Length: 204
Image (cartoon, rainbow, N blue to C red; front, side, top):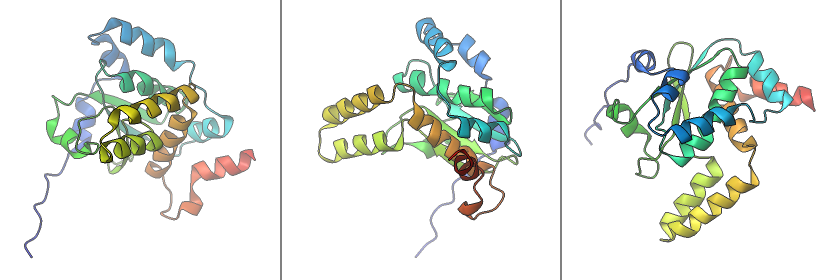
């Protein structure tokens, strides 16, 4: 069997450095109403004490490349969560890019073959790719996948909307993003040494 083609290596340091800071990304927003919603929203995101403690004590930097555009409803909903986390965790650094600016990056992060955003790519201190999140929580992505499988995406989107209504404070999103950060700052490959898990156990 022939070897599969090897994708071009992404220079994540370059991609991150080329991205916009959150404030610059907001300033360039095409939809000022959406920009205002995200600015107002970030401060109200609930972060439980255990996750806050974890974020405040990160042992080294985490870099997050956010593929996001301000026209998208899921971007408006989830970007403020990422920025609330970055506000609490001084070692969490975010940069924003668009699909158009980096098509070779985005093509690696399609969702069931679709160009769904946002996508948050989590990088270690040394810019090693450690995971990604988006465009919505795992349970909601599964609902959309099921909807596609049975040719009823409309019903799936209704279920996703209901899930969003049930989690207005986006606690599920906070937890999933914290888990991605936990991987990126791992001190050991064994999940028993998870810093996030240690904070959660300490709180119980």
